[in-house]
Image 1 (cartoon, rainbow, N blue to C red):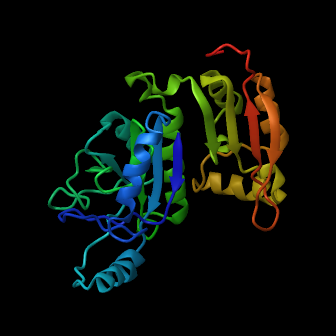
Image 2: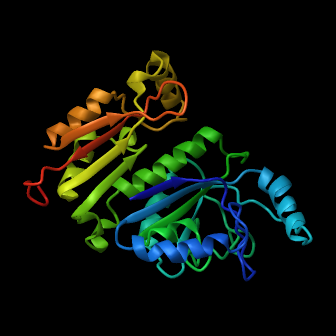
Length: 302
């Protein structure tokens, strides 16, 4: 599973090249071609989390046009949540599962009078780009199931907190919704490693999540997780702030975990915990890395 968060994805249809906010034109296309083959079939899904703000239109796009010596053409920012599917590898049911989940949290971006959300809308809240040809992030892993999310925290119809909740709902629908598993064996493994970064605390059942991770690992395979632990934060966060935000529907459900809970959950699934480390650049790190291994003699799928 690939899960990344980025600055805004800046793309507009209608030209031979996309507008990329992260690099010089064409810089990432070569990188995608160079790495996509090596990573192919190692990832079941790749979910890129993006947001777009008003400064994209007022600052970034004018600056980009000035840099490239082109006239600035004013545009608009889609008001709401939407997804970018892959033209060459469309997964409509996967996208629909995410849209259905996010619609319970915030509004979905409507198409304009041309039936577009920057590009032609292929389903409610879904557009498509040629991900590999344009060198976009989901093409790097070669995953079968890919999507790029877009939220708009400057929308008059949504709060930044709702946008965060929308991203969480998107990840939850992709990871635990199960709607795309019936299309193949991609998530049944066995895998050499499972990475679970910033996700275990957002799932309903820690034991069920670690059990599934253990089940799809090869004997000797690795589970590597990094999880925010509310129990190690200021007590007011777990005891007051989170319940209040939950009551106001501004935050998703969050498990109140500590390092010991993560280690114990791994051990209950028969995994050997080889190390727990913290790597904050400064201050106290409340997101421990836990490295666990499935015993070499364990049966695949057990």
